[in-house]
Image (cartoon, rainbow, N blue to C red; front, side, top):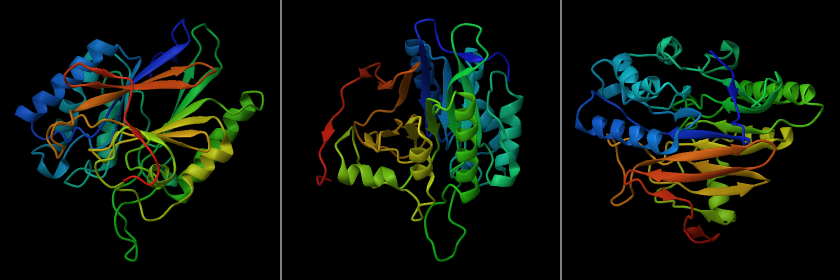
Length: 311
């Protein structure tokens, strides 16, 4: 990792979230994905680019490592710091998460980390954001989680979940940062690929903004990460991908649960539901704002309102 990531002089820090690229072999659909990311970067000029999983469609890639490098090359070439976490499709083929992480760490601009090996997964890490001045104390933090792939427990079908040791690690990190921050929970955001079970709950019980055109593909097992976030304090928003036709935001216990907007053309989508990216602007010592930037260049700041009980 090079220079520290800092808020701008006006106290903002902008993140472009690209999710579910499903990059394969660099053909026409992948080129459209690249063009979209280039458009977003030019329009938004983010301070950090985050890829929230399923960067490649590993089973369909002739060379998964080359595909990954090609997929993130827009970020590398932009000169903007970037980070990535993995989804369920990234390491299905003849490539491992650790191989992908080793590649990521070798590329220019990457601020990711492998994370501790004892907690499970590859890519559980924290990025600290510093103030605009030369102060060496962190002003906010970003948490990144490996949400796994598929359940390996025979009695539990479907997708994997953030493991107990990962939850413990998060709590330890949050508590340590709190102690260094005069006992005040650190302002923070979290990123993972597979949505937490609370994403389903918020749609069913709270007013949400955006669209849910497919069911929430969360794990059947709730391992308590969201509860740990509520208890830790400071977490303002969680951002995921995975479900390509969902882009809604809802709030539970003061934490906004946010879907990204699917970016890749080499996978399923929905007619007239444009590809795009979610933009997140974090305000130092305050809340964050977020909007969508679509493939047609439109900036979407006002989303459809969904009321509980209406599917």
